[in-house]
View 1 (cartoon, helix red, strand yellow):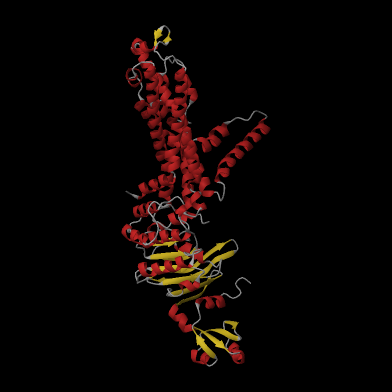
View 2 (cartoon, helix red, strand yellow):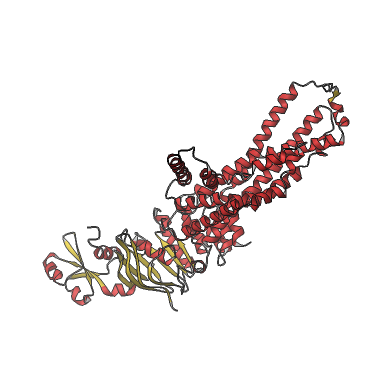
Length: 285
Length: 323
């Protein structure tokens, strides 16, 4: 299958700052891609470009369409949850279902009602009477009942408690995702998505600084816990990050041979969060 | 149902209070005022049916009326019914004004625009559905409220007439024609819509454009422009500034949503010169009244400007990126 999203030399400037700086990337079908970056790195701009919500320079094709010119056709196949709590406060659950069923040819009312049956939401309830978590449940039920080829999630669990967050990703994975679908997620809560991602993209200052599959990342990066006597030797191998814990140093290496690192100390797979911190070092400095 | 019908339904769901309840409440208030007046009046009236007007017992009045008088009575009732709807029309204008001001602003403020934009509905359809809600949906609800008000008033009059011992069917219902009055009001809806376009366009444009307080943008900008023009006019020509700008720009941008504000009162007055009864007033609301404003360039220039501003609002909704 061809690429779901193909971006070539994507740029977007706001005044003097570049939100996207000559970015190129490809997202294949059937992947769950995490787009991770610090605040203001250009994540949301990239997503907005994909969704045809903003103008940009460069070439971008989503499902073979230009999101600037063919937004209407594109939205039949693409769905997004922009943020929590963007459902209008006056909307009732029943009205939301009726409306989406009325305007979206790929929406399944039966599916949506099945998802909602698992929640405490009642048809007469208005969004203004719901908690943040319930709003997300409703939004997710609406979106998951749409048979879209690309789902874009921009900070979907912001401000939710841990129960709702876990449930959110669980239902996404169990009830929605399959190899026909593609999901792009941006979030700050990296720990929660790292087990469901198949691909990872780090974005910093409008540039993609890392773009790899999770398998490739496991191959490439290694974390070693080194005793103080070997620290100098470890530093000589030019680690990309170093931090101290319980009197030992933990070094993060990019691409060094694993057996050689094993001689220095105990090696393990770094978490995405640690990798992120090491990659983004000095962003706010 | 197609997408556009759903969009109209959506507008109704969101603005049920303004579209449905506000005109009904206005109608209810008018009815209540009349009812209180009637009760107060009747409580002071003699109850034994011996009340006299011009030497005729009131209960015999109906029998004493000539056919011509009956016709005049009916016309008088119809004119009364027609103008009793004024509070409903004013309510409709206020509701429409604020509906339009919020139409493209509220969804940006609460960011729900991102939800609407996640669905396969074009900006063109969305904005046009809001125009249709303002020009068609809201007036039709107001029309229904006006009908309820007319029937309520006729029932009230019947009770009063019956109180004096007359037969309400021969005096009131045989003479008044609420449905033809309603027909006349309904006939004006398309004219009101075309006339309102500059206001609709301007208010929606402000709604799509303003970062905050669209109301101030919409009102202060034309008023400030009008003031500048007047001052410039007064200073350079040393004369009392003429009101062309205020009448044809400021008022058209802000107040054209008021039903009947296209009315050419001078022309109406000329037609009233030889009036010999109330029916003339109602007869004046005919095809000529409707075609009169439509035949001048004024309304069409305004409509074109309105369409242009609506197009700009559609463009802004498509490309504006601040949420």
